[in-house]
Amino acid sequence: MPLLSIEKVTKSFGGLTAVSNVSMHLNKGELVGLIGPNGAGKTTLFNLLTGVYEPTSGSIKLQLEEEKNPRELGGLKPYNVTKTGLARTFQNIRLFKDLTVLDNVRIAMHQNIQYQLPSAFLHFNKYHKEEDRLKEEAERLLDIFHLAHKKNELAKNLPYGEQRHLEIARALATKPVILLLDEPAAGMNPQETASLTETIKWLRKEFDLTILLIEHDMSLVMKICERIYVLDYGMLIASGKPAEIRANKRVIEAYLGEEVSHA
Image 1 (cartoon, helix red, strand yellow):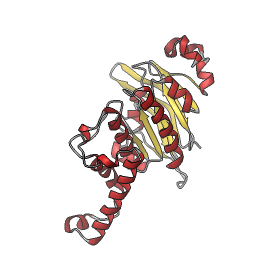
Image 2 (image 1 turned 180 degrees about the horizontal axis):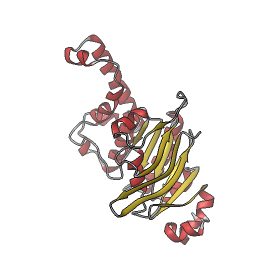
Image 3 (image 1 turned 45 degrees about the horizontal axis):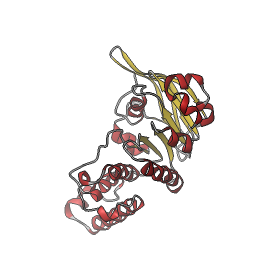
Image 4 (image 1 turned 60 degrees about the horizontal axis):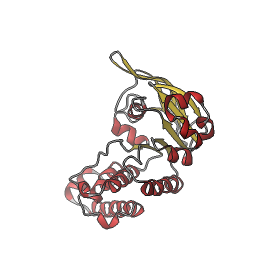
């Protein structure tokens, strides 16, 4: 069974259907792209996967290797979805901007703390050891994104590209099995995008991740994604390998454009 199975998922808001009867799957270790024009339903689908919205119909199931039966994610609160192993970034950056860079990462780690509430209140030895461990792990994540030297700066003072990197570091701090990246290259220049592309490939291998990626930069999508799903008006219109998507006439008409078919 796939790691993540999305079966006939629909989300309606009153008379508007934002996602209509969408079925997808992610196998363990895959790096999969989700593309489509603005308003196609991509971010709505991410919100369904992460508990921001509850599906109107359909199912979202996570099958972990260590568990016999799949978990139904549809209807879970976002914090419970995160505990199952899904983490995400946002199209519009949502950092804790008045906290330090280090604290942005540390706060994401506290769902996995190894001490109880009394230890936190009374500052037992276990509390201090665990907090030291979390601080070291947070600094290691920051070092990956070349942010360790800015750990004491407020997140709002980082340049835009570094805020993007910090948001990915914070998502990794939850120890996900699936990482959902919502337009991670948005607002980046070509050099930053090229660096991000290599970082995403490295993260998948280093952290044993399965990644689902929304992105408008087609050069990035075609370069790193093994499979691609295409949404248009909330409906799945195509899926396949990058070469198949480039050659799909319906995709070209809906989104990519003739010039991208040669990317």
